[in-house]
Image 1: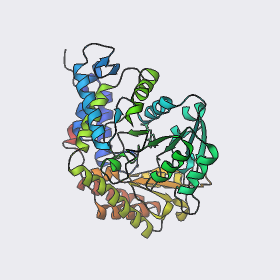
Image 2: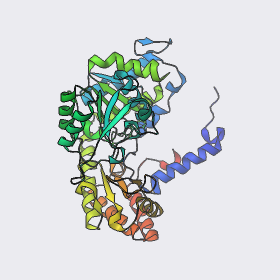
Image 3: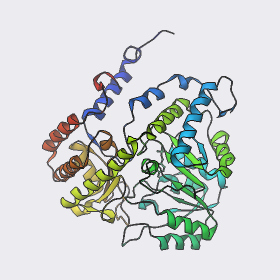
Image 4: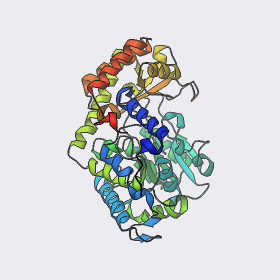
Length: 415
Ligand SMILES: *Cc1c(COP(=O)(O)O)cnc(C)c1O
């Protein structure tokens, strides 16, 4: 087959990719809490010939011939995930976190069954019962809330909500919660109501893998995750469970909700999990949390109020009313200064999801670049100056900082 370098085959896409590499490498501080940068080895696996083949089914039991090497790759991914998380069963085929949750629900629930999930404005994900999402359409969701005083999920309120609603399944795990998931409370709530215990560790998976955040296994029935957030892997989803649910989970992924797996992505997940088994991975994850705490202290010194007063994890949630502005205004001022964050509702927010009172700021991506506490304190000052309108000078300092912490080798010539 004739080889066409991308620059010849499609100069327009080639150009967009070069621009994006340049944006990531040297244009802005990436502080969206759900984003990270993968290792070049992961990019290589994702760009491989595994994309060429159908592999419907599972290792040793495919609907197509010729899957020997696909089996090797999928088995490696599954075994590594089992080893890292202590799971009895793993399905690495979900295309993304939302697809993992779709299949996870349907592995144990029927249409109309009762689920207890977080109030959406309290840090949950769309797939935890939002009316615009399949979850809110198909299942009967009730909610538990963050305590207004402590701004944390508290045991008594969770157990009380479970008693009141008697759910078939209880879901925990959040996209914008700066504290540990209180697993004990959910364990107790599920015991009282005989509900299936599911948690979605999409955001904190890397911290769990490194033993920094409590691990839901061996007690949990189902644990879903993305592989591309703190875990720092290829984009995708994954479902882990106890052995007794293995067949139900696998069937709910294929044939119930997906067709052929994206095996080049599964290869990317396998490589990511291999890297998560290395010795320095724990240090990386600890640095993410140390950096978030340094950022939190720096922001507080700059007069920002933080939801729950700080963080245990990889992100902070800043209440921008402490700066007399909305989340939307703050997001835009920061973007102009080269600091990329997202507006986010805070618990008991009086503003809509399109405006919000908060911004969510995360440290995984900057930590991947090699930044440590002193840089994050400096970044907190830059954030303070940027929201005060010092746009141009902050942007220059951001560019200098990025230059000091290069990301990809030979970024000029790759993407
Ligand atoms: C990001 C996220 C998801 C969904 O992931 P996608 O890959 O975007 O579908 C699910 N649950 C939680 C808690 C998340 O933060």
